[in-house]
Image 1 (cartoon, rainbow, N blue to C red):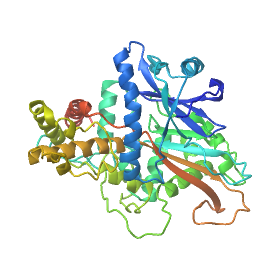
Image 2 (cartoon, rainbow, N blue to C red):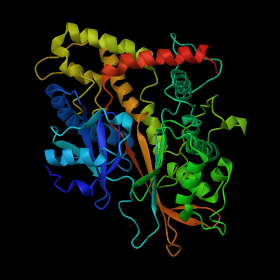
Image 3 (cartoon, rainbow, N blue to C red):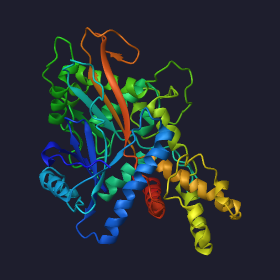
Image 4 (cartoon, rainbow, N blue to C red):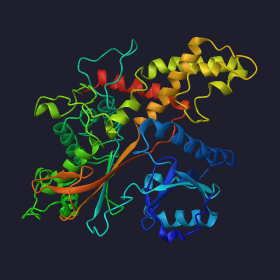
Length: 468
């Protein structure tokens, strides 16, 4: 196993989630994920975190990579660290990290980390191209309307889960403003709807949008607040290299002027084409007609869905999300049945694990394979086996609803000949080299299912009886 022994100064803070901290080495074009622990973590929890890294790598390699495609998912590598390196990273990142994250730090007792190529940079840029490289990170969330069950009847107006959750977060006080973004618009395949919701993301990025320039973050959310005029003016300034028009540095005095600027228009067109891009021409498209009543798009024009080309990144993500169409209430019943059965039949626990291990062809394994052993069959009831497979698929779909799509692009010099792999945008026909990667692919633990049910109850209760 490779050992990371570079000086900590060669790594810079990139971001973090609840369980890991990410630093980047711009020169080497790679990122390193270090496992975090809270200040009160004990030895048992630290050992569990070590095992989690191995399970996480197996999950990405054997579940998400085959499901989403090797063109979008890169296999990570496990590397060794030194305690001194981890402590130095904690020290160097301390003043940069968000205050709300300071209750946890990179664990210097966990000397294994995950390294992968930096999705904010192109792995093979065109030689001699000195134009800046941009990367837009989008958390697209669930791309279809939630399933309705006997427990939760269909509302009068169909609203996606993301938009209903926004209302609950505002009521709780965890958000000051609702997001204008609607996932169903970006998954529609209709360029007009997609550009509309991308502009909404720029106004209310929350944790669903980040923009990087040459590997450095320059546009994101500020404590959950909408973007200010200054934020958007700064965005346009950073994007000026995308705009070749004569008036490339206009005096923008309103939010609307910023959103309608040539630079922003070029970026949203690149993003839309990249998200729908396929390597070969195809007429095979998904037929998704889901429309969210909370979306602002229908206020301007009649919403419709063009469908997603088979093979584009959004098609791959949506297909993975559709592994679960039952919804958490029905899954919770299967989950409880599975727990009860394993409690009363302890010999069968290993064969009915939904939280790993993750062997090759994990999703291709039929539930009936759990009924076989080398010596004699283990007779698990069919309803338990079916529930096992549904819970397993639900958790994989959960990863697919919470991942991030990284769209990286760089404008090409005018002397580069046109190729189908490049994206052409704008009135001047500028070409862009682009790449798409999917990150944030950790497994979701089954122990969260009861929490999901509780949250779903709150979402529906708030939406049906709250102010809309």
